[in-house]
Image (tube, rainbow, N blue to C red; front, top):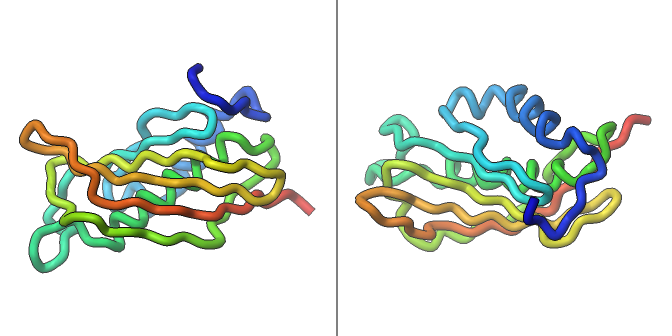
Length: 147
């Protein structure tokens, strides 16, 4: 484990995976969970023409969807077992057209807390032997605890 963070739940990987599997939108768009470490999560999405905008680039809404989940699950990996995660704010910067065969969103926690976490995500477009950074996101996530 090469993370600077220690998870509060030793079963964090299984909990992240189970929660990811509950997201029907991830199934709908064909996204899959990749690497899961304390405070770091990767989500991958193969290119699909039905997820593009008019110029055949991955739609910004789809980009933000996988980047938001990467941020959220990075934060979730550090939360206690009883917590749920909810995004309360994010900002995305679209740096280049999202053109590639595979898209990888890498979410990393920057500041964990008891209730509020700050995470960042990068979206990479991979294709033709290149890995290009196409978008960045900063998100604020909230841990929800049972009442």
